[in-house]
Structure formats: structure tokens, C-alpha cells
Amino acid sequence: MSAVACVWSSLTASLPVLGLVAALTGVSGLVPVTAAQGMTPVVRPPEVAQRIAALLPAQVLIMGEQHDADTHQTLQAEVVRHLANRGLLQALVLEMAPRGHSTAGLPADSAPERVQQALDWPDAGWPWERHAPVVMAAVRAGVPVHGGNLPRLAMRSAMADTTLEGSLPPERWQALQALIHTAHCELLSTSQLPGMARIQIGRDRAMAETVLSLQHPGRVVVLVAGRQHARKDIGVPWQLAHIDPALPSEQVRVIDLRTAGAEPLASDGGSLAPDAVWPTPPAPPQDHCAGLRQRFQRSPAESDKSTP
Image (cartoon, rainbow, N blue to C red; front, side):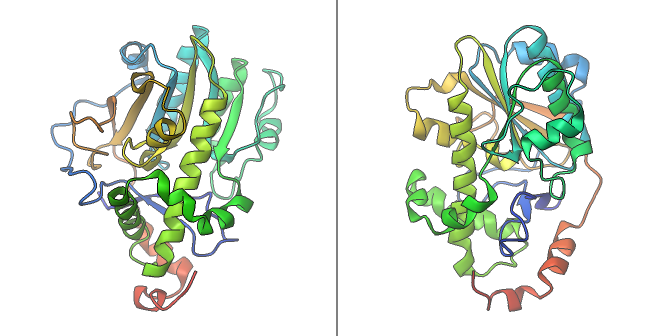
């Protein structure tokens, strides 16, 4: 599988150098990983109940997805229905919608169009038809859906906010920049990488703060986000621990929805490994770098001459 796989759609054209593609691999020097081998048979929706039971009790359940793998959204919807039917689901938080928007107060029979409006859904970046099943599963169950992503207008300030760097150890801050470089097909200049990495941290913090604001004893807050956001070393789990050290680590569970051939998020079995890996079929092959180069409309060498 290519090192570049998912579109970071919420980083929009209003910020032309911002994230367009998310890598699904680890970064050399951050956590040693090896290519996925010996994958178990793919997870099917009927297996969800048993697999979720093995992860409970938990206050936070993070599902890291590959955005263009439709089977991931199918499994997420099944998780939502399973937890909601048992009265365990407190809220659903999504990377795809901006923080500050939610379906709270909407009736369970609300039309999808009304749900999109309530979430300020950015359909240009996140196709509604792909994520509608998980969103509407929560709405139909009477469970509020909350946007967790950093709002667009906050991204520029995050890009310049050097204090965000302090939430990661120095070696992980450097590794995050390397990940950003790889994820953008090496089209960004070195000077652009710190700002992009700060935005990534800002997004992780926004999602973590949203999740923490929704905590309720005995219930679970589910976060759906890209796989890189689910990493325990640099993503939302790390930010949860950084913001609220009192939150027990065993109450934050990470599910890696891993397509066939994808790199692990961390060394399997290590302390930074996901709590569960759910193997899924491969997504349709795409050349994401070709689309990114077309959007940049210049070669990597020319990009190196640009400024943020």
C-alpha cells in the first residue's frame, strides 16, 4: 500500500498549503513498525458485539479509520448501534465536523439534511453519503453527534501557535513533522512543516477537549477519526492524557481499522499499540499523490521555494 492514503479534507482551500493527504504508515524514528503480516480474517458486522465487549468498560472509544474505506464506516455504524441499544453510548464525536456544532436537541427522526445543517457538515471535503450511516445511526438512537475538529478559522492561529509544540516530547514533535512531510508526498517546503504539524496537534487537542467535555459515568464517548489521529504516541490519546492526567489510560480504548496491507500504527504488542486491530478488506487503489501534485500545480522542487 502507498504511504499516502487518506484525504485530510477539513484543511481546506482557504489555507492553500494545509493538509491534503494523510499517511497511514508509521514514521521511522518515532515508533519502529513493520509491514502488516499474517492479518487475521476481516472483521464482519456480526462480530462487533463480541469484540466491543472485550474492550469494555471504557470511557472513551477511538476508532481510527481510513477515510476512503467504506467497510470502516459500516463497522462504525454497527458499533454505534450496539452501544446505543444497550444504553452505553453517551455521544458520538467526529473528526469530519467542526467543533461547536452538534445534533443535540434534534429529534431522532430528523431528516439527514437537517442533521448536516446542525453539524455544519463540510460536504466538499467529507462526502456525506460515506459517513451518513454512522451519523444517522446515532441520531436515530437519540444519541447526540458532536463535531470535534478544529474549526477552519482557528487553523491559521494554530499554525502560528508555538505553544502547541510543547504538548509533545521533542523527538515526537520532530517525528510528526516527518510524518507531515511524507503524508504530503514531499511537496511541502521544510519551512512549512512546523505550521502544518501545529495544526495537526491543534486538531488532536480540539477532538480531545470535545471528548472530555462529554464524559459521563458508566457511558462511552465514541470518537471517529483518521488512523493517524488515533495514535497513542502523537494523536488524540496522547492529548487526552496531556490535558487530563487523571483519566485512567485503561479507560481510553483505541481500535485500529486496518485495511489489508496497511502499516501498523505502532509495534504490535507494545505499549503504544492500539487496544484492538480490526482487519478489513483493502480500499480501492488510488494515486493520492497525483491528485495532490495537480492541486499544487507545481513540482516538489518548486514547492520547496514556496513559503507558508
